Image (tube, rainbow, N blue to C red; front, side, top):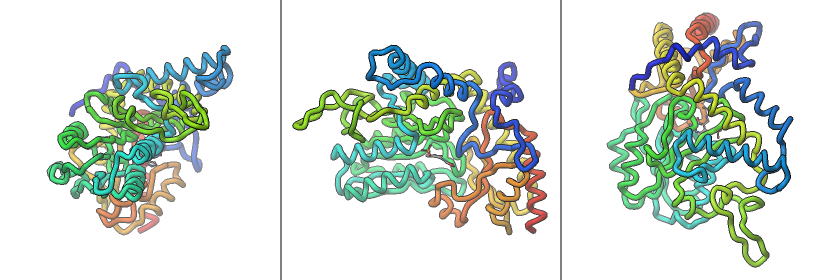
Length: 414
Ligand code: 7TS
């Protein structure tokens, strides 16, 4: 995949000006923020939109006839349309606002269980590359229903084995869940092909898009996936808000996830009937400001251009690997042919945690540990990695600072 950077519109220094948090010192040094896979920083447009919401239209949604309630409802529904367009969902009501990716996955796992759609003897498949949030809810579903959890294996490069996946699929497979991009290794999975293979055995598919949505354009109709999840805070938006996309016919078949206000059509002690999509899955007062400002974040992302971001970050990954390769004892963890957004590594003879602590003293924020992907770490027989994960505002100069910091840290530790 070759993507080229439009240097007329993409100017990293101008982009950095949009992010107030970046212009500070940490421990006396300029902040180098390389923990973007955990959460991204927020542009002024997003920060201002939060303040503007509370200063001008704060009100509860979908209930009031009064002016402010109408404005807040309109803004939230406009944001749903922005999200619909962004991921190319067929209908706006296929976009459910959730608390984030974890919440989206739990929603589907619990709703499937409630709907009696998973039975003893069925199989739920996850990949070996998953974040805990795309393992544990399915494991809980298996425990409750008597279904079996099946794992798609990976290889040393951190790629899924498509051939083994094909062999594991069978008429008992009810659902296959996998990420679009791995948060621990940066592997970009062949998701369209994987969806097609699952559909050949009539299994549903759930794509965890938490790490893909900040780095690439996503078209759910093109992928033909049944479900897709994303987190607002990883796409330069607020925390506590995200999206579950689901195909209309499947969402219609699912029982509600949580009961309460907003999700009903009528309530009596004898019988309650439920609202239609998307409200059936949005019980209670939602994260109104979050939902609205997620739309602002997506507008910002598109203004910069997802293709531009992808090209810029690909350059950072390439440059980072080149520079890190010179470090004695360097072992890259995850070397998939198709990768994006981050570099995971360990260095012989030193513990990732110790390196992370020393880098922090120099203002450099890298993630250390298992990245909520313990099975991936177990595969490589390591306790964790150091992870540098990039965003649109990072620069080659920051990678140079990381290298200086790393060399100093290694001198101290060795
Ligand atoms: N799936 C993937 C692939 C992720 O990377 C994460 C968060 C989640 C799901 C959960 O997202 P949430 O927004 O519901 O929390 N990943 C990370 C990480 O890599 N470091 O901190 C959080």
